[in-house]
Length: 175
Image 1 (cartoon, rainbow, N blue to C red):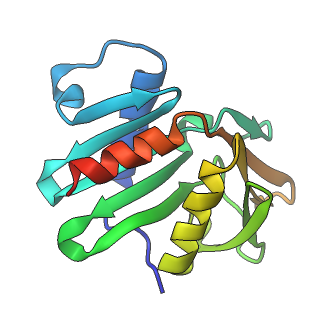
Image 2: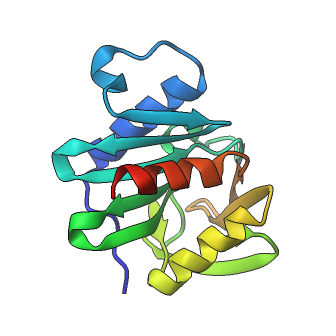
């Protein structure tokens, strides 16, 4: 069973900060830009030399729910070649979900049921990771849906233009 990518909440907050600044075309500080590989139409790829990993990442372009925290949500495809973990899907929700609700990723006419906890989700195994990436490559957008702790729907929508380039760039940078 695939597990959440190795990393703390601080790491993903840092990642979200980088991508938010990059996507907003705000000049990045030298400390933040050192590992940026490239920006691809709303997606970014970067390397993390400290743990020999690379990522393709984006924030949702649309978030449903007035209490949503768009800046905290993200979709990531991670690579840890030294650990033989590649193409690992990781989702951080725009808000906390109900612990008894399912998480569904929809892309390219396919639906995938993800594993997760209140704030994040991931693919069940490597086969699902690869099927999700194939569906992403065949689609213009994808959505992550669940039910929030307040009983309202969580719908985080991602545009996929640039996703394939960001994923491929991250994969190449971590070979």
